[in-house]
Amino acid sequence: MMRLFSLLAAPALICFVCAGAPRETRNIILVTADGLRWQDLFGGMDPMLKDEKSAGMEHEAALKAKFWRPTPEDRRSVLMPFFWTTLAPKGVVLGNVKKGSSVRVTNAYRVSYPGYSEILTGRAQDEAIRGNEAVRNPSSTVLEFLRRKLDLDASQVALFASWEMFHLIGEHQPGSIVINAGYRDYDGPNRSARMRELSALQFQVLTPWTEERHDYITFEMALEYMKLAKPRVVHIAFDETDDWAHDKRYNRVLDAINYLDRCLARLWDAIQDVPEYRDKTTFIVTADHGRGGTIEDWHSHGKEVAGAEQIWVAIVGPDTPAMGEAANVPEIFQRDIAPTMLDLMGIDYREYEGVLGRPIAMGLPKSVEGR
Image (spheres, rainbow, N blue to C red):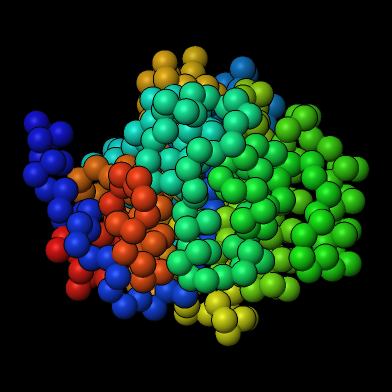
């Protein structure tokens, strides 16, 4: 019955004939947090894991004092204070399953590469992307499409990621955009002293993983690049929210989420100081996949893990009505993010060949919602 309602009510949430309308958005900043569960975003520290020895929480008194509160609303506000007190009220946040808001992946695999590809191409590509194998994205991404449609120089579309696989995920045609991901020396444009410093530092402050560098390096590089090049389209891909979960270290997952929130605050403050960005930039924050919701599988994801298909998305910008947390709304999908990016930039998403998603109407001006 709920699925039937969603199908009937979908026009209220998905915009079918709203592309190409005038927009205030001139820039898009896409931020992804790998595997950040909707349970943690909307509920803060998970009561199920608060004292769980197998999750690294047994001796974390200081962490619990910092992030534990009696209610989900209070817990999320201390874990992600900027997101919930500043960012969310200015736009819309979708994906709290407990409040009747579902955002779901449509790819069958529920792992990172298929999820990021669905975000960046507006479609699942299960026939070509079956997991995290190192293959080039078979489709031109929305980042490449935006560059072509807006007639931008390659330096005006940039992707900074902690996971090295983004060199294959982010573009179909190598060299189309600026990409720095994983343990790679930065050799792109605007190689400032600070960028050279960060590029060298990544090889000195190593993570426990071979394919993923620290999110600190990724974020600082992205912020430095934005200051120097002022790109119109930016994707910043955080990864430690996933890495520590796979290591069953919920204590470190909480630290990574809190760090993400501080980065969002710094990013927000930075764009307020730049005329090219201020009041002209839309933030889209989301995740590539969900995770399990039990003691046995909270750290896992994949096609066999129940709940790993559930993600979330936040949209904040000059064209997005200030609705806050959504409740009792029809389901939307991960593939809808790319068309939403295009619509917000004033481009008819239907020009993007192969796209299956539709713009998310709740992220667009009310005048076009549901048309």
